Image (cartoon, rainbow, N blue to C red; front, side):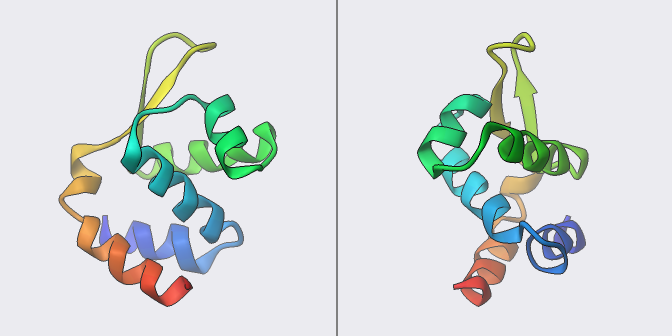
Amino acid sequence: MDKALWYLLTATRGGTNRARIIRCLSERPMNANRIAAELDVSYKTVRHHLGMLEDHGVIEPSGDEYAKLYFLTDRFETHRDTFETITEHLE
């Protein structure tokens, strides 16, 4: 997970938006529309980043396709310190 977080947040474009999405989901589960509104980012952009985060085991969806909520995974939570270290370098 540590390598995946470094890749997702620093090695590709969009790392800052992915970190912002993780911060939003740290507060509470949200759907893609809510995240887009909270971050003032397009829905399509949010869906792209959610897909990448899901593919790497950082988030997991729950619910049907339209009202799907996203949650941080337990696996991510065990590596939160790595996330915090990485985001210190982003700011």
